[in-house]
Every structure is written in structure tokens, then in C-alpha cells.
Amino acid sequence: MTQPDSPDGPQPAWTAADYDSYGVLADLGVPHAAALVTRARRPHPPRPTTRTLDNPRTTN
Picture 1 (cartoon, rainbow, N blue to C red):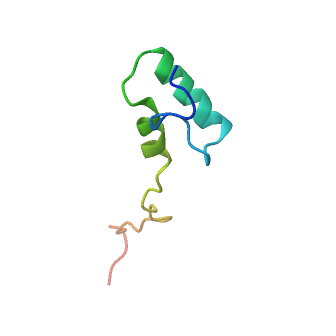
Picture 2: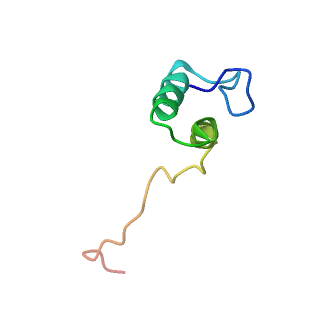
Picture 3: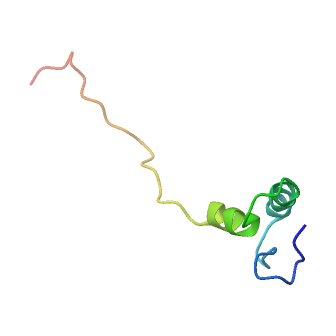
């Protein structure tokens, strides 16, 4: 497994789940495991909370 002080190692803001994910990926030999975990932690654009569908039964 990559050492924590290496550039491709665990990051200070990681959670326990991030460390677990990193450990699994590193043990499997996945290149740049820390980068993959960090990319997965990036904020994603918010999804719309509701969707509106046209109701074909209503008439105007």
C-alpha cells in the first residue's frame, strides 16, 4: 500500500470510508488509487428534488 506521506497517498480530509476504499484499491494494485478516491469525493452538481410531468388527463 502507498505510504500516507506520499503524493498519491491518503489526504487529511478523508473519512474512514475513504481510507477503506483507498486500501482496497491499493491492495488490488489500481494505479493512482488516492486520486480515484479523491475524485469520488468531489462535490457533484445537485439533482433536482422534484420533477414535473405533464398530466395528459388535464385539459386547459
